[in-house]
Image (tube, rainbow, N blue to C red):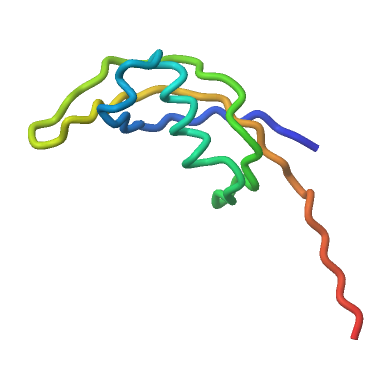
Length: 87
Protein backbone atom coordinates (compact mmCIF):
# COMPACT_ATOMS: atom_id res chain seq x y z
CA UNK A 1 0.00 0.00 0.00
CA UNK A 2 1.34 3.40 -0.96
CA UNK A 3 0.38 6.77 0.47
CA UNK A 4 1.20 10.29 -0.70
CA UNK A 5 2.40 12.54 2.10
CA UNK A 6 2.82 16.31 1.75
CA UNK A 7 5.94 17.71 3.38
CA UNK A 8 7.62 21.11 3.61
CA UNK A 9 11.39 21.39 3.67
CA UNK A 10 14.21 23.81 2.93
CA UNK A 11 16.60 22.53 0.27
CA UNK A 12 20.20 23.67 -0.18
CA UNK A 13 21.26 23.86 -3.84
CA UNK A 14 25.06 23.97 -4.32
CA UNK A 15 26.48 26.58 -6.73
CA UNK A 16 27.56 24.03 -9.34
CA UNK A 17 23.89 23.15 -9.89
CA UNK A 18 22.80 26.70 -10.73
CA UNK A 19 23.01 25.98 -14.47
CA UNK A 20 20.24 23.36 -14.16
CA UNK A 21 16.53 24.06 -13.82
CA UNK A 22 15.55 24.79 -10.22
CA UNK A 23 12.88 22.04 -10.13
CA UNK A 24 15.37 19.42 -11.36
CA UNK A 25 17.97 20.42 -8.78
CA UNK A 26 15.43 20.43 -5.95
CA UNK A 27 14.01 17.06 -7.00
CA UNK A 28 17.50 15.52 -7.02
CA UNK A 29 18.37 16.94 -3.58
CA UNK A 30 15.04 15.83 -2.07
CA UNK A 31 15.47 12.32 -3.46
CA UNK A 32 18.97 12.18 -1.95
CA UNK A 33 17.57 13.28 1.40
CA UNK A 34 14.31 11.28 1.57
CA UNK A 35 14.30 8.31 -0.82
CA UNK A 36 14.81 4.90 0.81
CA UNK A 37 14.76 6.44 4.28
CA UNK A 38 12.42 5.73 7.19
CA UNK A 39 10.83 8.84 8.72
CA UNK A 40 9.38 8.71 12.23
CA UNK A 41 5.55 8.45 12.32
CA UNK A 42 5.37 8.29 8.52
CA UNK A 43 7.15 5.20 7.21
CA UNK A 44 9.50 4.33 4.40
CA UNK A 45 9.85 7.00 1.72
CA UNK A 46 9.97 5.40 -1.74
CA UNK A 47 10.58 8.48 -3.91
CA UNK A 48 9.62 12.07 -4.60
CA UNK A 49 6.28 12.24 -6.41
CA UNK A 50 5.84 15.96 -7.16
CA UNK A 51 6.93 19.44 -6.10
CA UNK A 52 3.80 21.36 -5.14
CA UNK A 53 5.13 24.85 -4.41
CA UNK A 54 8.39 26.76 -4.20
CA UNK A 55 9.10 29.93 -2.29
CA UNK A 56 11.85 32.46 -2.93
CA UNK A 57 15.46 31.32 -2.81
CA UNK A 58 17.98 32.93 -0.47
CA UNK A 59 21.77 33.06 -0.47
CA UNK A 60 23.29 33.49 2.99
CA UNK A 61 26.60 35.28 3.65
CA UNK A 62 29.54 32.89 3.69
CA UNK A 63 27.60 30.20 1.82
CA UNK A 64 27.41 30.36 -1.96
CA UNK A 65 24.49 27.93 -2.16
CA UNK A 66 20.85 28.90 -2.52
CA UNK A 67 18.29 27.80 0.08
CA UNK A 68 14.76 27.26 -1.20
CA UNK A 69 11.72 26.40 0.91
CA UNK A 70 9.01 24.40 -0.76
CA UNK A 71 6.35 21.75 -0.48
CA UNK A 72 6.51 18.31 -2.00
CA UNK A 73 4.49 15.13 -2.30
CA UNK A 74 6.39 11.96 -1.51
CA UNK A 75 5.33 8.38 -2.08
CA UNK A 76 5.49 6.35 1.11
CA UNK A 77 5.16 2.63 1.63
CA UNK A 78 3.27 1.66 4.76
CA UNK A 79 3.41 -1.82 6.22
CA UNK A 80 5.58 -3.27 3.48
CA UNK A 81 8.03 -5.11 5.69
CA UNK A 82 7.16 -8.23 7.62
CA UNK A 83 9.95 -10.28 9.16
CA UNK A 84 9.77 -13.76 10.60
CA UNK A 85 12.58 -15.79 12.06
CA UNK A 86 12.79 -19.51 12.60
CA UNK A 87 15.38 -20.92 14.98
